[in-house]
Amino acid sequence: MVFGVKLPVSIQKSSIECGKAMGRDSEAWILGLDAMFNIGEDRFVDDDYVKSELEKLIPSFNGIKKVKREKIKVGKFSSWNKKLEDAFQIYMDTEHYACIKDIIEESIARNADNLLFHEANSCPEFWEQTRIVGGINVAIPLIKCAQSVAGYRVFQRYKRY
Image (cartoon, rainbow, N blue to C red; front, side, top):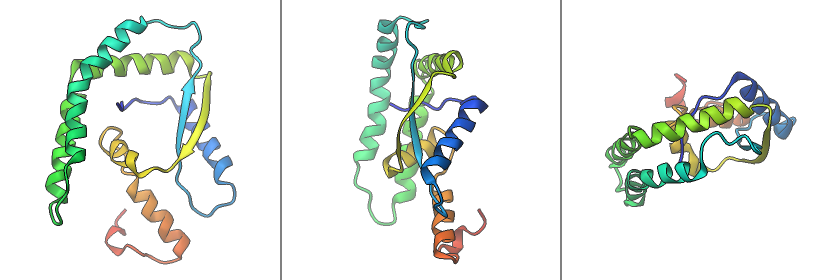
């Protein structure tokens, strides 16, 4: 399951520095950085309660998985994408989603200094989740990177971005 949460500026800055270190002297790159917090004994919510709330999210998240399993016919991407966005919205509109999101954001706030980046990737599977849940369309900077490396505007229809 995926949750859209706000990251403090300090974590955003750490992410940028981590990305720069990994990208080194590359002209263009986009990385998804995975991180974990060492919360240690700072558990302010009972684990069983969190598990219970996550279990209550399974039916709405299964709606997302169902749409993702559908075969997309040529020329029907827009309608499929709308179904996917609607399924995500149903999931994000639940009280259980809001509860878990609040717990995650509180954990982030309490443990912002105990962050460990443990993986970097650029997996396309997560692009749609980032776009729909996080509100960030990763495709746009990817196209810009491709254009900068190629030295010309490969995708003219995206030049407005």
